[in-house]
Length: 231
Image 1: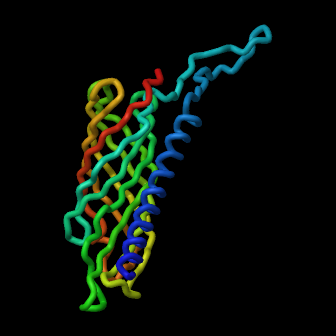
Image 2 (image 1 turned 90 degrees about the vertical axis):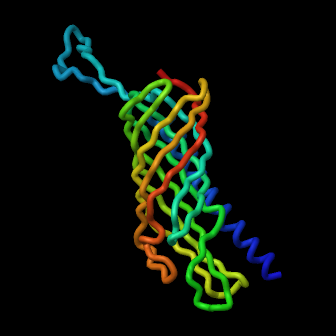
Image 3 (image 1 turned 120 degrees about the vertical axis):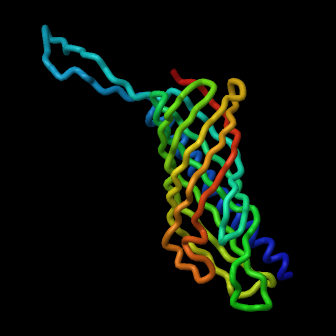
């Protein structure tokens, strides 16, 4: 019975983290496509009227040029000095062929061992995080993109034990993750993405793992679906 309850708790926490990241991703993509579809800024400073008509000058536009709806991927990192894999996904919209705004998140599929207060129990922790990212493309192109982005996210970590005990915890924390990446087009609809990042976490105040134990360098791969070229 305890094993069934423990398995239920694992699935519940993992589903919560996945839904949290997915909701952020969908909201940010919808926000980008609806709000920033096209915005124009007048560049004429004369502002004078002639014969009842406004003098029109040149206009600078800020518009969406590419919408990458999203995709799935795997992130390879170390947590609490142990190698682990996190799964998740991201998506973004590109403006003026240079600026990107999107969202994404990652969640652990397998827990990492942590210190236990009871020598007769095995303790482990899982974590996940998700949020919005802002980026810039250094080398934009149809076949190859090279860029950088900053993920501003929120995350959560929870601890469980086997057999189940009261030595459990759940904690939320902020995350900053700068990233550099490149994308290669695989036809008209798909893109392969590979990148490296550093995950910076603070404010956890956990007895079994420090902020430094949860932070670290990551490498990831992913496959994205390109929704459209919006020029």
